[in-house]
Image 1 (cartoon, rainbow, N blue to C red):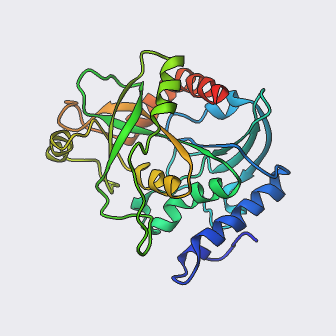
Image 2 (cartoon, rainbow, N blue to C red):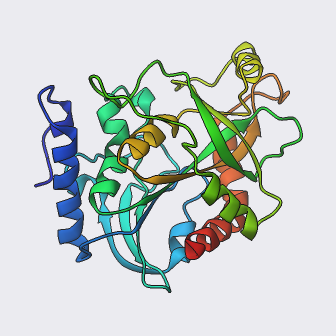
Length: 277
């Protein structure tokens, strides 16, 4: 049952996969949908996609599901939604993301992904709003994630668990996305811990080690999705150029404004990609 006091994932002896299974059972009970085929986490700027994917079967406040809590960040809707596409597939839309910088631990960060896998989803789409390192990119531009660099010094894998991350962000799914929008560029995502924005020197470090996108989510979730056996598509909305590349100061309001301006276009694109899966 949903937890009203504390969070079961905070117990050191807890099994995060058992808790994900409990959460999946909650979702099945509350939505009336026994199994979901696809899961999508909607980051800043991507929220309208939920309206375009298909028919909403049910919307659940995230805290009603075991292990979930209310998002700390404005721009995330705080719900789980079950959507049926025109083709009859069931999509679990996750609008409740726990960020690593909230200091709840990695288990909570990846709980949504593990829950999605426990509902039956075999495809995980991870979206975010992020800073662009390439000067040719502009705010409001969606880009595909081709790989990542995890700069959090953490992992969702516990114990002697060794998972191959080759082709973590599926080349098949990236090709599918480009078949819908051939203009889509791609790059390597660097997850920093946050919540402060990166310094210009840190952005240059990311560039030197091969990064093109900087943000505070996604990489840890992608690792957990791979462990769960899901195929992963990652997409970033470039909300601003990163510190030192953009000449004006960074702000969260800027991120939200770029998301609001781009939302109709990127949401329609994401809906078309999901339709093609």
